[in-house]
Length: 358
Image 1 (cartoon, rainbow, N blue to C red):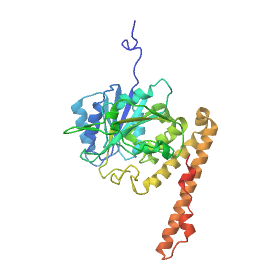
Image 2: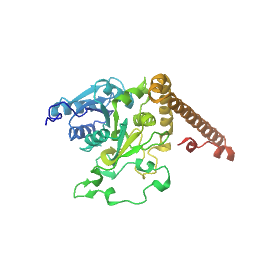
Image 3: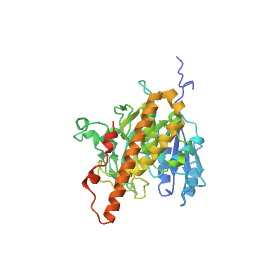
């Protein structure tokens, strides 16, 4: 019997890998090595240098010349546009059905692409995005944590949360390295659409369908300078849900110069940056709202007008509450500067974000 795979009638999907780099000359070579070492071979990789002021471009060019692999190429931007702008530039010169983004200071383990593609090709349902867990490493590559922080969000109440650490959660330690047993394929969790909950890890642990990224990409991606993962995953998940892999398939580097994770690893329940980046979140939600309004007809024809209007209403309420909280915080700061004691109602009367959550 003829095998359509061996005859080239059926082909595995191409993945477009976009490595975004800004002043990461020290780390970008290791990131590219991790892409080149993927067990899944049907990929293309564009390295987008976002106008680095160090020698990142030189390091990338030297690496490309040494590896001589036509799947890899460089796009050097003349001016800095931010994380989502770099992604948009990478999308413009690639054509893969799936898109995976790797920050130039992070790493992928060899099965990253293979496992994500496998999950996306499941026979149950198609989803716009997937996400895996990552170990955390320091600037020299020492492992400082065996996961990121998203696992705690998978349950909506305490009774769903894990209360013990099993053998499958712990790595096997050797004299020089470690192997996480969870790298074996595990049960993938289907997350139904919701809003204002963060179920995932970070950019370097995600894969998207290009069709969804094209649909939700804002007209001016430069407005999302950092936390592109928050922008993309929030919209993709709200409209079509997402998949969460239990495996540890990448490494997130904490080196002291991260754009977002400025605090050291203090535990899975601690903030990554002072205030947990609420100002960044608010700005990105504003961009989401503008984009949904600008593409209302298209989005409504696909997902239904009610779903689009619901998003608009809830985000407007969220931003209004955040603006009120910010105004209260400014008033309290002014009163304290003036040597006056704020009234208790002012200290405790700000609306809570939890009131807007699902």
